[in-house]
Image 1 (cartoon, one colour):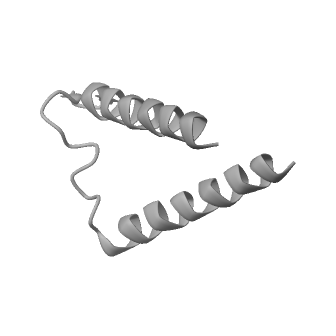
Image 2: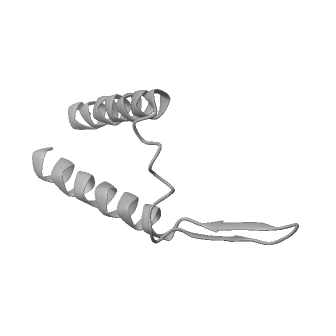
Length: 71
């Protein structure tokens, strides 16, 4: 149970840091990367954040790998 509690605390701290970065505007570039696809028609807007989601997936995979090694 100790490791599960520690993992929850780490996840909470990580979410708080990400929230503070978003609030301060430090993550304003996220979602506007070169590979993010946007198409705007007359009455339609389509947005597919391909590069942003690939980056997020890689970061979360790295974080999970590190947490598995540490805990």
